[in-house]
Structures are given as structure tokens and as C-alpha cells.
Image (cartoon, rainbow, N blue to C red):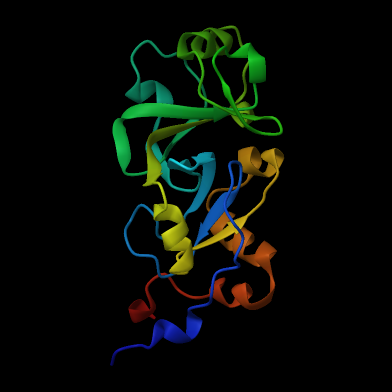
Length: 196
């Protein structure tokens, strides 16, 4: 028997994306990268968008994937399907890391990686101040807007504190719950209804 999941499909919230917003995937978005994902938009302009998936952890510590990296209790997350041979990071260290790009409030993207490693070696950085990503999510001009029109994403605002400290296992459910209203029906929909 084939299930009709269209009853759970809900129109997007019609919020225009901007740098610093999060994207909340609708529950039926296919593909292992974006299924029930939360993405922070690190960059957004007329040329396109770049973001990082916040709630898909890789089962390796950062020092296992990078040579000459200090011992540091931090996870790596799958940032997206583009540039998966590189590590990217967001942080709350600001000007301490030269070359950082301000995303919003006290949240930054990238910067001088050697300075970050040095700050870690000196014990001046804790795990709540930095998130690492393998690869990134990217959209060409107009592509993200088209996906939003197709109801693939909800656009929401979130504080820097919530981005850096939230439990990634609960992040999607809590983000949907925070949207409230008609979106809360997504919260308990099983990832694979055929297994119920």
C-alpha cells in the first residue's frame, strides 16, 4: 500500500532568505545530505548562497581528519555536498581569527586556520566557540529561491547562542516546533513511514 504523504506537505513560510538565517528542510526532502537538515546561511547575495548543515555529525574527531591539529574535543559535521575534500568552520571568536567574515551578531565564518590552531593549542578556545564542517552547501543565483518556492525549505532566524550550543539530534524537531502553527505536524512524522 502506497502512502499519500501530500497531506503533510505545507506551503513555505514566505520569508526571504538572508545571510545568518537558517533553512529548515521540509520532512520529505530527499537525499542523505538534506533530509531533515538545518542549514546556516553563511553567505547570501545576488550571486547565490553558501551554507553549512548544522545537524549531521561525522563520526570522527577533527584531529583525525587533519594533520598537525591539536587535541581538541570538537565534532565535525557534514557541511554539504560541495567541497567535501576541505574543512570549513564557523565560530564566535571574531577578530581573534584574522580574515573572519561576519555572518551575524557574534557569529563568523572562516578566517586564518593557523591562528585558530594556535588559539586551541593555548587553551583559549572551547568547543562551544567553533563548529567544523566537511564540505558546504551551495546554490547558484536564483536556485535557493526556486527551492523555497517549491516548499523545500522554511526560512527562520536563530540566535548565535542557539546555533553553537544546540543538540544536533534534536535541532530539526526543535526548529520545527519553534515555527509553531501548521508546521508542528511535521515534528512527529516518521523519517521512513514504511517502517512503522
